Length: 453
Image (cartoon, rainbow, N blue to C red; front, top):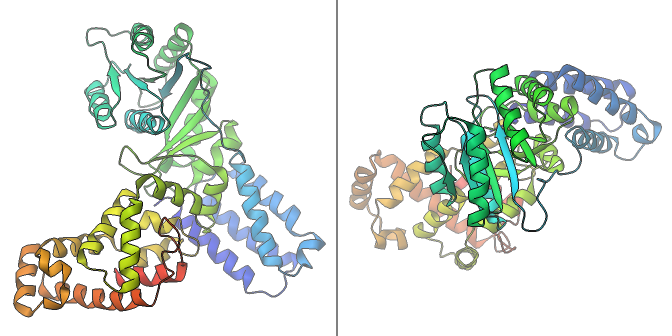
């Protein structure tokens, strides 16, 4: 998950600040030196780091801060505010054409950035907002580029326009607009060709498309895991073609965070979306305040609630809540909860958005996705009767289940033991799922996660 290393380092800095009853100017300077090193290791632009830490120091060494009742929290608040400002403060929206006019979006970027996949992800995101998109295959060079767009378009239920015998992207773009007007599409998204590096041929092609088709949004897709290199790519495209915003892809990887924290400050161009997973639904609108909260280890409950609203079956969640209260939670319910978590991006993704559960080592120590997959295999090897009534699981049944799941019987015994402990715990936690999305009680959730390891 992106930012884990940076989050961990920053949380250690904050922990040291909180351990002091009062702060001196030297305390602040020492902490900011550690923050500076953490940001540089995350591949944040050097000039950005210098401006960022200078702004924090200027505000944090004032008498009102150092002499306040809780100076450590005040410094953390200043860091949070400056980080939000660094990434743009306000959320930037796409420019939509008024009335019944077509909104055009040109996607550009280097090869390997995930541009074609991101194009389909954007269509899926806009579909949720009631937009009827048309994906246009303008990459006439890369082998299988058109096919990839068609496959992804079919997965998200979005039509793809192509001209197999035409090798001129400008002609394809013009014809696509005419087709969209005829078929009633409200958004046209052009998937353009990429290159291994920025060159004149690539830039000329993008400029020609813009000169012949009215483009409302030119979005650059950059690989978020490349850090400072992504910033350099953004500068290059903006200088030669002109971009309206950036989409950070692959932010679910080992991205260090440098691109997210540097792009706006260096280029002046906003980040509009971030790709947070491999699924075509794994793209989010970029909210500077929420991203800052995640980076600083404060969670992102708003995004979590939005994701839950879109994916969680509320009726099933409420039924499960009642079963938990009565201590009647069975293995079928366990499977249902795992399926719900998968829809939301997996347990690690959920926990990364929860306050108090973020920070690289903390999440990885509490969550082992491999163990969850093994537990699922064990449960699916059980009969319907065994899932509903775990009490009947005798040694003979356990041996059969272990063989069916392809695991040692010790793992079956461990799961059954943990499950029994979890059932007992559920009876003591009637308020755990008190809100309609099932996210209440952080301490209860921590204990539940321990039971699922």
